[in-house]
Amino acid sequence: MKNSLLIQGAFMILRHFFLATVVAFVVSACGASPDGSRVYVERPVEVIYLSALEELERRNFMVASQEFDEVERQHPYSLWARRAMVMSAYTYYVQNKYDEAVATGRRFLGLYPGNTQAPYIYYLIAISYYERISDVKHDQRITEMAQATLLDVVRRYPDSDYAKDALFKLDVTYSNLAGKEMDVGRYYLSRGDYAAAASRFRNVVLNYNNTAHAAEALHRLTEVYLSLGVVNEAQNAAAVLGYNFPDSPWYRDSYRILRQRDLEPTEAESSWLTRTFNKVF
Image (cartoon, rainbow, N blue to C red; front, side, top):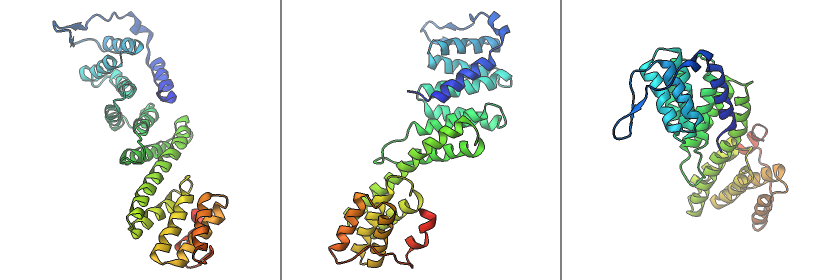
């Protein structure tokens, strides 16, 4: 199901852009070639725009996007071209043509950065990345782009409905990026590359501590530090885990592996975890 804010925004734009005088036009200038393909002839801008709206209403999104693009091609400096560019980005989005939606949106912002529809376009770009987020087994560059563009919406338009929704969706990006770090960290851990694993788990604790992955990251640090022979850091990681997630099964596992070595979770004042304790948690 497509994003409801984008759909609502598109209909608001259509209502705002619709002029009563346009209704008088009859869309008849667009014909077809012998092979059935569309033939574009020079047409009044209002005629092309109305044609695009009619195709959009019929849910012929591909034809609608072509017609909106044709408005800009034939009448690039008109007010209608700005309107058409916004609607073109939307029709690409509803077709799942996200790269085209982003490209059209960025082109619009480059030409009209102060336009009243800029908030809508910034949000559309962000959602065009967000809806392509994949599971943590895959590359997370799209997730990073989604996060960056969602943050841009929040920064630019903090009091908007777009920002409210962007904040909610940002949690998903943080969780995915943390999940990817955990997945890579576990891989290194399984291969005995403890230093590389520690780097990944540490990144989760420092940068994604509000996600569901933080408790496991602290447990994995306990494991890694024990494997490296850095006992005080292992004890400290377990202590931080127990303080913040006392009922977590990850804490029980950390406590168990420490007790197997006659050790206890113990705070270490010199540890990086202790130094950043208040900031991180």
